[in-house]
Amino acid sequence: MTKKTEEKIFKILMILSTSIILFSLILIIVSILIKGLPVLSVEMLTEVPQGGYYFGKGGGILNAIVGSLYLSTGATILAFLIALPVSLFMNIYLIKKKRLLNTIRYLLDLLWGVPSIVYGAFGFTIMVYFGLKTSLLAGIITVALLIIPIMIRAMDEVFKTVPRGLIEASFSLGSTKSETAFKVFLKQVVPSVVTAVLLSFGRAIGDAASILFTTGYTDHIPTSLLEPTATLPLAVFFQLSSPIPEVQNRAYASALVLIVIILIISILSRIVANRNKLKKLNIKNAVNKRFIYYKNIRQNYIQSMKNRKYNKDIK
Amino acid sequence: MTISFNRYFKDKFSSGWMLVCLILVMTIPLLIGIGLFLKSTLLLDNYSLVNLLFSKIWKPLDGKFGFYPFIISSVCVTFMAILIAAPICLLSAIYLTQYAKKYLLKIMHPVIDILSGIPSVVYGVCGVLIIVPFISNIAPVFGKQTPGYSILAGAIVLSIMITPFILNILIEIFQNIPDELKEISLSLGATKWETIKFVLIKKASPGIISSIGLGISRAFGETMAVLMVVGNVAKIPNSVFDPGYPLPALIANNYGEMLSIPMYDSALMFAALVLFGVVLFFNIISRLTITKLEIY
Image (tube, rainbow over all chains, first blue to last red):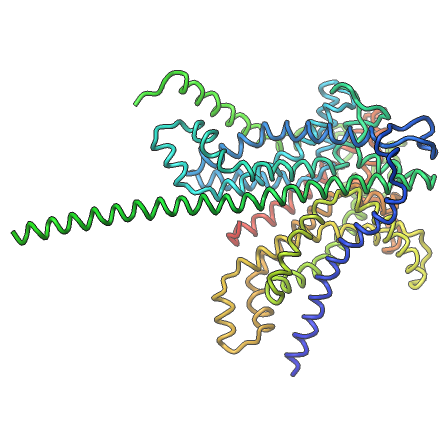
């Protein structure tokens, strides 16, 4: 009897904790919606801050939205240029060196765990070292450093699942390693690469601690890489710390914009990932079919050899 | 077999490019460590390490750099966040993998993804909106008056932030436990709950510990959300309703003014180095335990 009650109590606790998690997500989104939606207006989305914006006068956060998009697009492109070759290298060149591969993955996971404020401090040090001022470029470099490990690991996880046979087939047809990587391997994994890129883009657009030092903040939309730029997370942060309630309300609206962008990215990557699953299945099926086909040929051959021998013996 | 010069050159070139990128990425942690260390040497030359870590007075303008209040705040916030998040995640992971119908797990996966994708600033906003007023209302019950910006608020916000992270690992760990183990235990007459309690949790315990370790490292370095709700008073907190001032918040709050004083700049970089070291330490330990489990 006591066994049963113990199980029941724990089951209730389990359901409770699962619903707490669900509930907290709903609470976050709903509270931002309730607070942000009434303040959100077309003006906010399409105008840059005007004089006295931070005292509750007219204007919007277009500078932050555009700045954030610039920053995360730049960082994603820069990170992609480094992450793609690394993950291809890991999965094609190093595929036989299991130990080395595991060490690299381990290091990447460690890098993933480094808090973004440390990247921020580091980016700031580099910036000072090279004599850069707070600028879009410095922000892009810092955020790229932050998302490179995320991107590599996300790609790597999917690259791992591509059947070895594909690479071997490509090698056996005489292609070089880099041709295999870019012309054969990459074509199979395009959707997952897109997912990885979207995932890192979402990370890049939401991070505030790393750009606090490096991008600065202005009311203008930047026109070159060397200008400072406003970003959405920092817009939320600065507006919320204002004592004026109207400006605080705008912080909620900015948070709503940020969360909507993140949700769109998340949904997009989910759609791409689902299509990817179908494709993966196809690859597997194709390889399996090919394999069965060759197996049959081989068996037929062996069988015929046996028959021949048998016939000879009879003769 | 020979290949044309063009193809050969292309192959060499792109292979070289890949290798360079790999080496570049691999040196990042080293660069971060060295960069921060070089920056903080100025501080370390002038003060002893023990003095820095255990001195309680923080007056950068007078040249007094005691990191003790910040470290204590960081440890308090992190510890409490884990205390809240770990049981919830563990129970939830067991429920989702052992009891719940499959569709619930399918619902939870996007929920976890979205929770982990929400930017920390948004968590901070929610903390200011919901948790801070909640705590200022609840504090009088315990005989304290507080505006709500406190260690407890930081811990609650943090616990929600690290939940998806821990839960994800735990679900994976529980799913990777071979079914035979469960079946053997059930066939020996144990009930489902006994199987979970004595077999599954025992088998998963290294994984559970390392997931908590990873959660700690994530919580320790979290900046914006904590910064927004924790109050930021450089004093050793006496109770959970007191404001605190964790290390990341210290760095983030003072980035503007530090440039004028080299020693101050150096002190903040030292804080970043400490943060980096602690996070790396927890990460290394927990990842090592997890790789021993051979799940990754």
